[in-house]
Image (cartoon, rainbow, N blue to C red; front, side):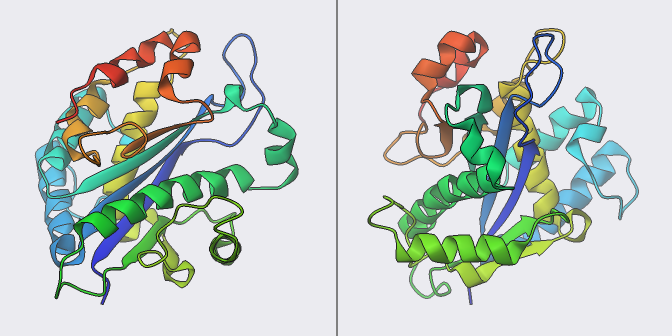
Length: 265
């Protein structure tokens, strides 16, 4: 039996068409993981029941964070933030990627690379917090199903990383992550995937500047207590910016300064 269940979803896209008026592809691709101990997994079902009741939604109504109004999103993420979960988020600012051709010639390569960065950090989190007599120490990886993407290709990508960990400087702890444990489930089927959708969307809204020049960081701030820390450090662990680290990204994205100002504890 797995020790952890990991729910993964994304916000943004993988395009590279950036128009001067702000149209075209989204500037950010954000991938988030919600990590919960297997013994606490059913708690997420109760959380979503409570959220639907709070928001006046039908009992079986699936929630998409982007479809909700701001006044509904706030209590939604506040509820998530109070649960025994940890989150890991990778934020990719695509305009800073220099070798864009590399990610345009092979479909879904950017998504797979974001998955690598995410699973490195998820594996560290699970390794640091696994407990004796509580499963096998491994993580059950559940992705929100992208119908146009092959998850067998993703599993094969992870197998390739596993065999080339040293030359490629892959930092996934393979005692936690097994490529064969990857599976994809439709968003509406699991409460944990709807929670992961809310987390990914929250950090996307905090990073992305909309057509009016505004970013909305309130949701991410509310979720900050859930972010994975290693020895008190958040950046590089629960929050990973790529291809540049946060200090360099701030010059082109001054609205990101608040990430560096958040307390570690």
